[in-house]
Amino acid sequence: MSVTRFKVGDKVRVRKGLVANKYYDDVRCANSMARMGKKVLTIDCVESDYYRVEENIFCWSDEMLGPAEKTLDNLCAGDDISKGFGVRKVLAAVDDCYLLSPANKYTVASNWYTAAELKEMGYQVLSPGHSITPIEINGKKYDRSEVEKAIKDLEPIE
Image (cartoon, rainbow, N blue to C red):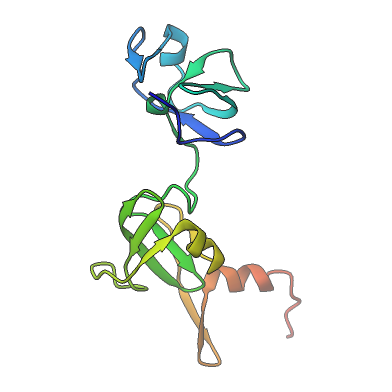
């Protein structure tokens, strides 16, 4: 088995529920590794069939680790992304390609996009439970939290 999900410098999270002395993709899980569930590590070295991390001496496999944070490179079905006001849902994910819903219509399929295309278009991953509330100014809709952040230091005129 070869490791392919992560590269040097990636932040990864140890899977919760690893079992001591069990093999994951031909890499044995030590007792202390099994107790590290949810800990965030940094990939330091990628060998042909395991990873090494900066934080400890253990070898890790793809099956033992997951991405520490959502990015446009590791989206899953059900994730939300946004570019400005409209929220789009990832309906399907195949390798580096994502089938998206139209903005704010989560049960209809739109188009397939690669992660590179989404980055180029300026999309960002939204955290679970996000809340984008629109505000209309001069007939245009904006994300309320972005507007509030932009004007928070302005002096009010009485």
